[in-house]
Length: 259
Image: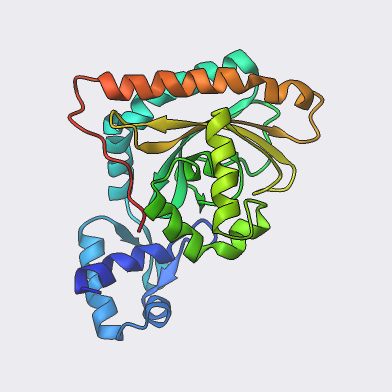
């Protein structure tokens, strides 16, 4: 790992659960020499990616807010998908999510939550594994075989636990069935008590970029009609994919490669 990679890896320590870190704790966590860690923190602070707080600790800096604004304005999935997600939620009465493939995970880029939205609903900037739940499974179903094999080798146990198959052949069969129906439906596979319904998003080359999904509580009285909304979700996904493919402002939007 290069020195630049090691410096940027310090940012991985910051999370909602652990938003404040001291220099000493970061050095311990990363295994960096204290002098090296201090030098990296100084660079990240000067760049605005980290900010100092009391007792010499650090939090995520204001530069991240500026970059998030740029992302909202320039990311085609967000800019073209957000109005569609909003309309889908309003039309169906269910919470809606827009997510993208990010390395070997799924990241939410937009959430439209209803008043009765499930607790801990996937929100912008949150990541989750690329296994389990409709939002992830529909992306998994359209990955190229070499990327799917990588996921299988790394997350075989999670794939089995999610009910997607106990071996390579059964996984491929399960994902083929998802592709044939054009959507993925899940009941509490990733988060207990949450049902999901998702369809895939593609770039102009037909590579999977992410997914659009509806979510609801499994205890909802409207759960019976929830799965019947699959055509509406697939229609919304096709609309976003077409907008991305035909936008004059986009030369090419490659799929987010798995790490």
